[in-house]
Amino acid sequence: MKTIKVSVVTPDGPVYESDVEMVSTKAQTGELGILPGHIPMVAPLQIGAVRLKNGNNTEFVAVSGGFLEVRPEQVTILAQSAEKSSEIDVERAMRAKERAEQRLRERQQENIDFKRAELALQRAINRISVAQRRI
Image (cartoon, rainbow, N blue to C red):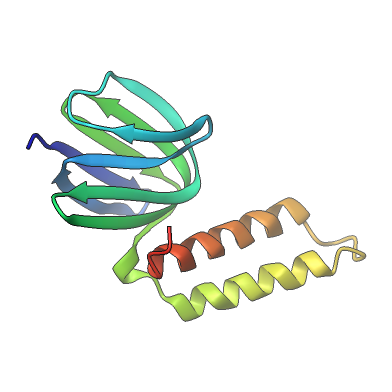
Protein backbone atom coordinates (compact mmCIF):
# COMPACT_ATOMS: atom_id res chain seq x y z
CA MET A 1 0.00 0.00 0.00
CA LYS A 2 1.14 3.56 -0.69
CA THR A 3 2.53 5.63 2.15
CA ILE A 4 3.04 9.29 2.90
CA LYS A 5 5.86 10.81 4.95
CA VAL A 6 4.72 12.46 8.19
CA SER A 7 6.69 14.85 10.38
CA VAL A 8 5.42 16.26 13.67
CA VAL A 9 7.60 19.18 14.76
CA THR A 10 7.49 21.51 17.78
CA PRO A 11 9.63 24.54 18.67
CA ASP A 12 11.75 22.08 20.70
CA GLY A 13 12.42 19.88 17.66
CA PRO A 14 11.00 16.84 15.88
CA VAL A 15 8.63 14.55 17.80
CA TYR A 16 7.62 12.03 15.15
CA GLU A 17 8.82 11.11 11.69
CA SER A 18 7.75 8.09 9.68
CA ASP A 19 5.98 6.85 6.56
CA VAL A 20 2.31 5.99 7.18
CA GLU A 21 -0.71 4.93 5.14
CA MET A 22 -3.13 7.44 6.69
CA VAL A 23 -3.12 10.47 8.98
CA SER A 24 -6.25 11.66 10.75
CA THR A 25 -6.63 14.60 13.09
CA LYS A 26 -8.96 17.44 14.08
CA ALA A 27 -8.63 20.74 12.31
CA GLN A 28 -10.54 23.87 13.33
CA THR A 29 -13.01 23.04 10.54
CA GLY A 30 -13.50 19.39 11.49
CA GLU A 31 -11.98 15.93 11.23
CA LEU A 32 -9.42 15.38 8.47
CA GLY A 33 -8.23 12.14 6.93
CA ILE A 34 -5.11 12.37 4.78
CA LEU A 35 -4.01 9.65 2.36
CA PRO A 36 -1.03 9.60 -0.03
CA GLY A 37 -1.65 11.94 -2.97
CA HIS A 38 -3.98 14.24 -1.01
CA ILE A 39 -4.40 17.73 -2.47
CA PRO A 40 -2.12 20.38 -0.97
CA MET A 41 -3.65 22.30 1.92
CA VAL A 42 -2.91 24.10 5.17
CA ALA A 43 -5.23 23.91 8.17
CA PRO A 44 -5.10 25.12 11.78
CA LEU A 45 -5.35 22.26 14.29
CA GLN A 46 -7.37 21.90 17.46
CA ILE A 47 -6.07 20.40 20.66
CA GLY A 48 -6.41 16.71 19.93
CA ALA A 49 -4.86 13.48 18.76
CA VAL A 50 -3.08 12.76 15.52
CA ARG A 51 -3.71 9.16 14.50
CA LEU A 52 -1.04 7.62 12.30
CA LYS A 53 -2.09 4.34 10.67
CA ASN A 54 0.35 1.95 9.07
CA GLY A 55 -0.99 -1.53 8.35
CA ASN A 56 -2.56 -2.95 11.50
CA ASN A 57 -0.57 -0.53 13.68
CA THR A 58 -1.97 2.84 14.79
CA GLU A 59 0.18 5.32 16.68
CA PHE A 60 -1.11 8.39 18.50
CA VAL A 61 0.48 11.78 19.07
CA ALA A 62 -1.15 14.37 21.35
CA VAL A 63 -0.90 17.88 19.88
CA SER A 64 -1.83 21.19 21.46
CA GLY A 65 -2.86 23.17 18.43
CA GLY A 66 -0.67 24.23 15.57
CA PHE A 67 -0.89 23.81 11.80
CA LEU A 68 -1.10 20.93 9.36
CA GLU A 69 0.51 21.28 5.94
CA VAL A 70 -0.30 18.66 3.33
CA ARG A 71 1.68 18.13 0.16
CA PRO A 72 1.15 15.14 -2.16
CA GLU A 73 4.10 13.21 -0.71
CA GLN A 74 4.41 14.71 2.80
CA VAL A 75 2.38 15.87 5.79
CA THR A 76 4.01 18.29 8.21
CA ILE A 77 2.43 19.14 11.54
CA LEU A 78 3.84 22.22 13.22
CA ALA A 79 2.54 21.96 16.77
CA GLN A 80 2.90 24.20 19.78
CA SER A 81 3.55 21.02 21.76
CA ALA A 82 3.32 17.33 20.90
CA GLU A 83 3.94 14.02 22.65
CA LYS A 84 3.83 10.43 21.45
CA SER A 85 1.36 8.34 23.46
CA SER A 86 4.20 6.18 24.78
CA GLU A 87 6.02 9.22 26.19
CA ILE A 88 3.14 10.90 28.04
CA ASP A 89 3.51 11.07 31.82
CA VAL A 90 -0.08 10.23 32.82
CA GLU A 91 0.41 11.20 36.48
CA ARG A 92 1.69 14.63 35.44
CA ALA A 93 -1.26 15.04 33.06
CA MET A 94 -3.69 14.07 35.85
CA ARG A 95 -2.13 16.70 38.14
CA ALA A 96 -2.44 19.32 35.39
CA LYS A 97 -6.09 18.35 34.89
CA GLU A 98 -6.80 18.70 38.61
CA ARG A 99 -5.09 22.12 38.75
CA ALA A 100 -7.10 23.36 35.77
CA GLU A 101 -10.36 22.07 37.24
CA GLN A 102 -9.54 23.77 40.55
CA ARG A 103 -8.89 27.09 38.77
CA LEU A 104 -12.20 26.82 36.94
CA ARG A 105 -14.04 26.15 40.23
CA GLU A 106 -12.50 29.30 41.72
CA ARG A 107 -14.27 31.58 39.24
CA GLN A 108 -15.23 34.09 41.95
CA GLN A 109 -11.61 35.15 42.15
CA GLU A 110 -10.84 37.89 39.68
CA ASN A 111 -7.22 36.92 39.08
CA ILE A 112 -8.07 33.63 37.33
CA ASP A 113 -7.64 33.57 33.55
CA PHE A 114 -10.55 31.30 32.57
CA LYS A 115 -9.63 30.83 28.92
CA ARG A 116 -6.11 29.78 29.91
CA ALA A 117 -7.51 27.36 32.53
CA GLU A 118 -9.96 25.89 30.01
CA LEU A 119 -7.17 25.34 27.47
CA ALA A 120 -4.97 23.75 30.14
CA LEU A 121 -7.85 21.41 31.01
CA GLN A 122 -8.35 20.48 27.33
CA ARG A 123 -4.63 19.79 26.89
CA ALA A 124 -4.52 17.61 30.02
CA ILE A 125 -7.60 15.61 29.01
CA ASN A 126 -6.16 15.14 25.52
CA ARG A 127 -2.83 13.89 26.88
CA ILE A 128 -4.58 11.45 29.23
CA SER A 129 -6.84 10.16 26.43
CA VAL A 130 -3.95 9.70 24.03
CA ALA A 131 -1.83 7.96 26.66
CA GLN A 132 -4.68 5.58 27.41
CA ARG A 133 -5.48 5.31 23.68
CA ARG A 134 -9.16 6.03 24.24
CA ILE A 135 -9.52 8.33 21.24
